Image (cartoon, rainbow, N blue to C red; front, side, top):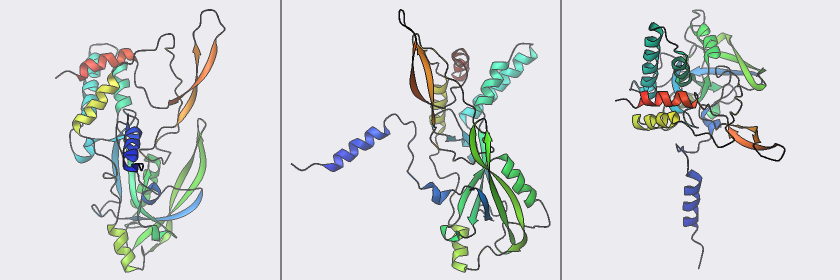
Length: 309
């Protein structure tokens, strides 16, 4: 009897998706995103097809709630359960402060849950125009550099297809607490130029663009609510191994041009094993560097607040 490979593939797909909180379509990110490399590169901002009057777009993400990041529903002007919860926690903190009570836990939770904002620009890279318009994602430092150029009347509209200005992006090696990354510096070219002299290519660059808000799944209010509720569930410490894994500091999100939905990397954590009559030994366990949030006691406390009608 011949092997039914379709059933094998179906089972493989089921096994590979088991346990995932969110499923994503596989994408070739090199065709979607552009990231600065070491040295000098010349890029040009392309007007957003849905908002040609402003060359940048801010997007808010919920990170550290689940392994993969989630869009905040406030990106669409909708109510978001995590942001509503943050406001409730802040209100509780203000009440406690007014009463002379300690509100450190409230502010800690509000800070941990605060959405992270990333900025996107549509760009083409000179010499790689055939790759089309790609998304450049960056944080506050790069955004400030670009906005200073945009705000300089000598350059006019730097994203204008006919009279805009190319940008020189210089990538240098940088390091923060042992983490290496490429830090971009942005300056403007002296003279304006055409986006392209090819009419067909111009039409393609202006219309065939990736929307930062449509690349990944938009979770519903109920789904985000459930993920937050799960995050607030206290974890029971394992018997005789209730050891807190060390928190590894990473480079500031504003400085690293990382993809918003990249998988977490792992670090080796050595945990002592309790024994009665033998010397202590150690073993190595891989653990994802996902923010575990506040302590069990704090999570219990805020879980009650979260479940109030």
